[in-house]
Image (cartoon, rainbow, N blue to C red; front, side, top):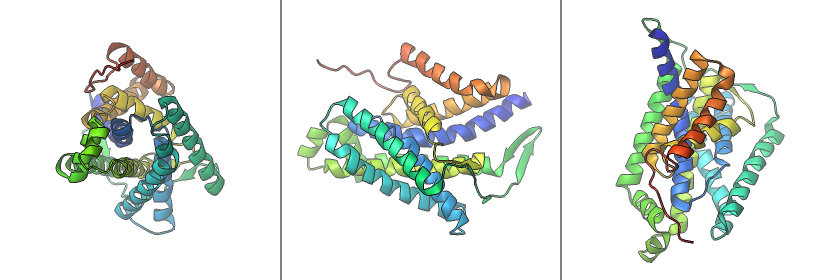
Length: 292
């Protein structure tokens, strides 16, 4: 029983990070129906920005987190303006291929500037741990979960209580009607990319602290897993992304704890196949019909 509870704790910590990344996927898809595969690399950049802020700027955890979020928000807006906006009326496959191209571009530009080697993340949090019987909860896990919860609550507030959030919801339903009602669709899309990318930046700092290592290719697999989480929860659904992230994180830790850690990635993608077969729209997604 103690091992089960320990895996639940570990799964919630890891799942909180996946949930933050998945929120960016689901927000962008909800607005412009684009799977932004460059999102995982924005998360990678956030990890490196946080690393630089802590190592060279001598910042604490929260200032470094804020710097990473702001930097990634700016990068997200630039990517949208330069790469995606010119293709907004193009086919989905063109936008998807562009997203993959942007992903590779970010990876190798970062590799050019910082090198390909793995870097150890600086110790910025206390290593104090709490013992509940044989279950260990360390301060890193507490910071990760509390930060993720705070950011998710902030996102819910933005989406449901602010004019920008109302504009996002209107554009996600019908961009043409929203534009006729006076909503600036381009600005709303930029805000969406900024918020989603900021959350990815926060996840980058959290995962650097959690795993204590970063590298320029670190965004590929977590980005794909966060995409699985978004699909499971219902792509386009913010609560679904949160549930999906926690589910994928918990599943991964259980496979590692009770089986073989080598199979944890395979288990996640097998889960995606099963979900797409059983319920393609996801847990909280809605079935939509496309007219031909």
